[in-house]
Length: 236
Ligand SMILES: *Cc1c(COP(=O)(O)O)cnc(C)c1O
Image (cartoon, rainbow, N blue to C red; front, side, top):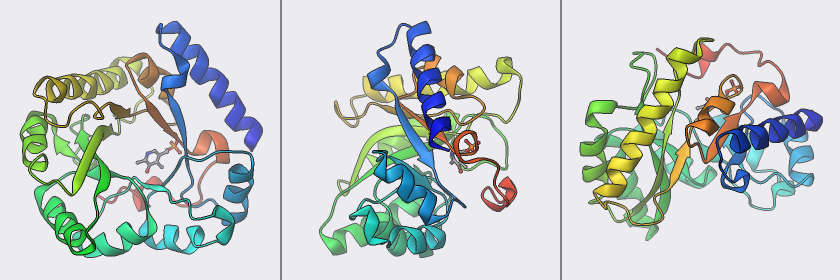
């Protein structure tokens, strides 16, 4: 399994090189939904420190293991407002902030805790109804709204590209996210620490790196196929 992770790391380096980018600016996130704790611990012991989980309950069960020494995964799934507390307890950075009602709920709980949390804004660059995320046309406005909440430290954007084997359909999704990121930077909404583009998965991470990804989120290419269909994780 971890041989696969090394294969991915090599491909990431090649893709960065091809794009004239410094490969140290692209991190590999291991997406561990459905992966049992024992296998994640194996990766942890090999030094991997960036993980993504998609379901809070599942994450809570797995990441309570003391072997992780308190490390918490990023949350990359759809976050319901009634799960905000447990998400803040179980996960670290939240990559899927995509609507004002969620921002309000997060802010309320973070204020109560006297805490600030790092988040990414999720953008729907594929225009597929089944994907969560703020619409491309609304993204800059949404960023202006989120900027009013000091409990949220926004350091990047996240997206899922169109699911397609056609590069000509996938690449524009990544370009859109990069464009929005540039607009937000030019508007000076979040300062210098706003720099992340979380984009690219098992099937399209090389294209994402060419388009500026700083974090690629890879699951099946490392851990093998999941038993549950993706519709379980991306409810329509
Ligand atoms: C599952 C998932 C991934 C990883 O998908 P793979 O195709 O298995 O690499 C990336 N991002 C999100 C949000 C996911 O839910």
